[in-house]
Every structure is written in C-alpha cells, then in structure tokens.
Image (cartoon, rainbow, N blue to C red; front, side, top):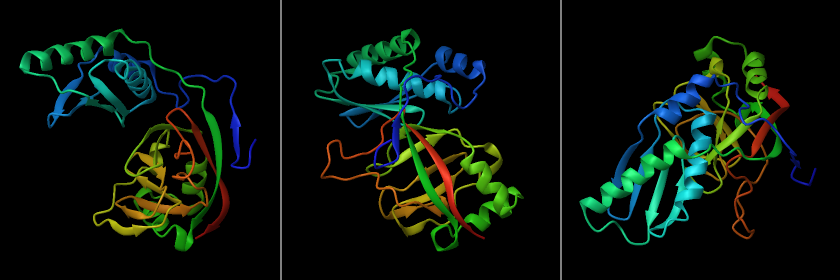
Length: 248
C-alpha cells in the first residue's frame, strides 16, 4: 500500500462484475459498427451491452491496432474504440479493407484481462459535496443508507478514461441505484465529485460541467500534468469506495 492507498493485485479473475456468459458471447459474435470521424479517425462501436467482456475485447483490439502502420493512436472508450490515422485511407477501397481487418481482428482476438491496482477512496456522501443524493433516493425508492451501502459494495473496474483528463468510467455499479442523467447539467462541478449517470458511476478528476447526479465527494487527485503519466488510473485498475461520513 502506498501513500495514495494503492496496492498491487497479484492475480484476479477477469470478470469481477458477475456478467453472465451470454454477454461475452454476444460481444464476440456480433458485428461491430464502424463509422468515420472526418478523414483522420474512425470509431468502432462494439455489439451487445456494456459489460466487462466487451471492454476486455476493446482493450485487446486497442493494443493490436496501435501496432498497425497507419494507426497513430488507439483510444478505448465505453463500448467503443477510436483509431487515429497517421495517413487516412486513400479511397473507399482502402476504407473497406481497414473495416474488414477490424471486423476480423474483433472476432479473432483474445480478450485482455488486466492485473490492475486497487485504489480505495474515502467518500463523504450527501451534504454540500453530494447535493443530488436525495434525487437518487427519490428515484430509486431506497433510503440514504441503502443507496450508500449499494454504492460502496462493489469493486469497480476502470473501463475507460475520458470526458476530461483523468476521468474514470467505472463498470460494476448495482443497477438498483441507477438514476437517469439530470435534465439540466451542472455548470461547474468540483473535482473529486462522485456521481451516478444512468447505470454508471464515476469520479470527476477536475472541475467542470456534468449532467450526472453527484452523491458525494473524495479528496483523491486523479490527474497531475506534472507527473508521468499524468493520469493516476488506467483501464483495468479498480476502485473501492468506502464511507467517510454521510450527511443526509
């Protein structure tokens, strides 16, 4: 355990969220959707539901595609993968060839199971740092204590980084506390805000706008441009929330 509350996991099972095997099969056997992002990148959207087996395939494809001569960067997202080009495909035939290679690679690859770090985060739930906890309670019909207990029960895996530098999209939240995104976003949410948006939860790495429901706050710094790498977490790492206090 280091000063950030990080410890190394020697070995773990690849599926921490108890996803049934049919989701893994759906991800492996489905047809990926490929769309152009201008002339300098493309987006591969994975088939099936958002789940760990799909993300493990995306991680594996990102590592493989990053070695391709025409690819300058492969960026895993939530249920998708963005590929940036050194030189864009010259014509429609080249685009079709690349799309075929991606489809074949998706079916042939072995899902990537990563040995991640566990980061434990002390969270103050409710109060000024969690102004929308009451909204989650109202939507779910659960009590404050039940929402907090369900939120802290899982060991969450980092599926992807995005939204803003250092932000972690987490998989594994209990569906009983899923809450729709807010109709009107918050303009300036503080860094360290712990929020729920739909079936996902995450922690803001820096201040900025958000449409998610903020239920708590932690003091962890997820991004420091003076460090290398600047992002503390990476896909495959794990987060466990623990209760610091609850302000109903």
